Length: 77
Image 1 (cartoon, rainbow, N blue to C red):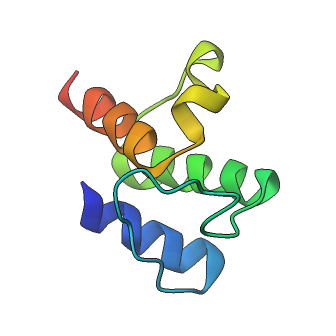
Image 2: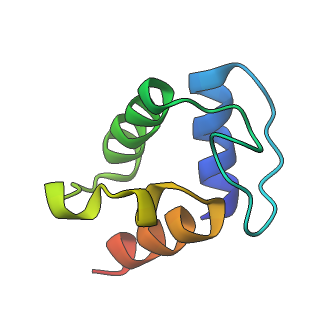
């Protein structure tokens, strides 16, 4: 899942972002909220998943670790 997210981030941001545990998308990786919306949309399209509004929180989207955990959970179900 980590590699798929890296590919999506590359497509959306045009940058090869290293996904280390616990990094903050905004502060550490420079991914702003609008870009994060694009990342979420691209994840839905690429992975064939749908996020519920209640899942799109700062807790789930703030760090690489939390977002990967959310993605893994969605792909398993």
